Image (cartoon, rainbow over all chains, first blue to last red; front, side, top):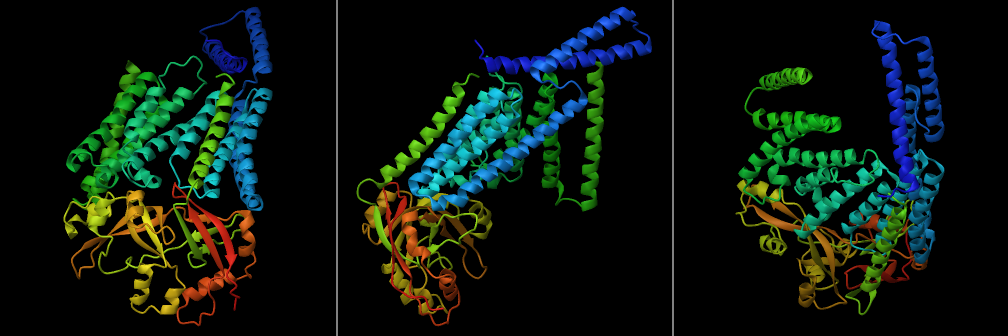
Length: 361
Length: 258
C-alpha cells in the first residue's frame, strides 16, 4: 500500500526514536562490559564508534525531533500533560463562549456558527499537522474539534426542541475515529471507541423499550462489544498509527471486564435476564474469575503489559467483591478480614512462584 | 492514513447536521399534530444564567394521582401495557423485582384545561386551596401508551391534548397498612425546556424584574392573596415527530403587583 508523506513521516519518526533508544542502550551496555572487564575496545575503534553514533544522533534529532536523553523524555511527558490540559481548557472556552453569545443570535446564525466551528477546527488541525511534525498542537486542536462537534449536535437539538437520540453518540464516534486515524491520535481513538460502544449499549436499550439515557444499567451488550474491540486490535492494517492496536485492546479489555463486576454482584439489577437468575449468577461468577485469568495468561505470552496490569487489577477487585458478597453476612467481621488478608498473601505467594517459573523458562 | 480522512470527518459533520435539520423540517411540514395555547402556568421561564444567554420555557404539568393512596389509572395493567414486567404477584416478597426495573420510554398524553383538570379542581387534595391550585399548571397527565398514533385516536382533540415522548418509572408502594401495589409515574417529558427564538423574546424580556420569582413564590405560599394572573400566553405547536416549537408569545395585559 502506498503511504502518503505524513504516514511515512509518522513511521520514520517512530523508527528514528527506536534507533536512538538502541544507540543509548548500546552505549550504556558497552560501558558496563568495559567496567567488568569482559570487553576492551582499542582506542581508535572506540573513537570511531563514538563519532559514528554522534553523527547518527545529531542527524536523527535534526530530522525527526526525537528524544535523546531521559531529560528530554520527561520533557515530552510534560508536553503531553500540558497538551491534554490545553485541549480541555480550550474546549471549555469554546463551549462556554458559545453559550454566552448564542442567545443574541438569530436561529440561522446559531446553526451556521455551530456547523462552522468544527469544520474550521478541522482545518486548523490540518494546518497544525503540516507545520509541526510532533503534532502536539494538532492533538490539542483535534480534541477541541471533537468538543465543538459535540456542542454542535447537542445545541442544534436544543434549538429545535428535538427528542434526544443515541444517534448523537454514533455521529460523534464516527467523527472521533476518523480524526484519530487521520492524525494518529490515541486519546481520540479511545474516546471514539467508547462512544461507539455507548451507542451500541444505548441502541440495545432503546430497542427493548428502555430509556437509553440510563442504558448503562444494562451493560450486557459490552460483553460482546469488548471482544469485538479486542479483535479489532488484530485487524491487519496496512498503515496503523503507533499504539492503536494497544488502545483497541485496552478499551476492549475494560469493556469486557468492568461490567462483570456489576453483573456478578447485582445480577437482578443490571441484567436483561435472558436466562434464569441462578444460571446468570453462576455464569457471571465463572466469567469474572476465568476471563481475567485468561487475559493475564495470554497477555504474558504476548508481552502485553497493559492487558496483564488491567486484568490483574480487575481480578483483585472482583475477588474482594465476591468475598464480600459470599462471606460478609456469614461470619464475624474480624474473621472476614482475616480470611481476605490470608487470601491476599496466598495470592502473592502463588504469583511469586509463577514469576520464578517464568524466569527459569 | 491519507488526508481523505479529513474530508470524511467534514462529511460526518455536514451529514449529521443535514439529517438534524431535515428531520426538523419534516416535523414542521403539514398540519401540526397538536396546537395548544398555554400560559405562564404551563410554561415557566427557566432560571437565567450569566453564562448562558439563551432563553427557555419549562413545560410544567401535573399528575393528580402521583401521591394518591391507590394506583389510579396508572396501575399494573397500564404498566404492563407499556412494557414493564408485572407478571409476579405484587407482594412484599417481590418488592425487589418491581423496584429494580429501570425507566422505560413511552408516550404521555397531556390535557390542557380539560375534564381531568375540572375533576382535579372539584376534588382537590386534602388541605389544598383552590386559588393555589388555580396557579398550578392546568396541563394534566391523563394517559400513557407505547403507540402515539393509537393514543391520538383515543384522544382526537388536537387543541386540547398533546402526545409527547416521555420516560416512565414504577413505584412499589408498601406502607405496611394496606396491600402493596405498584403505580406508574412519568419522570420526564421531552423536551423538558422549549427554546425561545430571539424574535419572540421581547415580551418575556419586558417582564419586570422579579416577576417570575414572585409568581412562583406566591404559588409556593398558599394562603397569601394572589393578585396576579399569568403574564403571558404562548402558542405551541407539535409536529409529526412530536417535537414542539413556539409559534407566538403574547402578553396578557396583567400588571405585576409586588
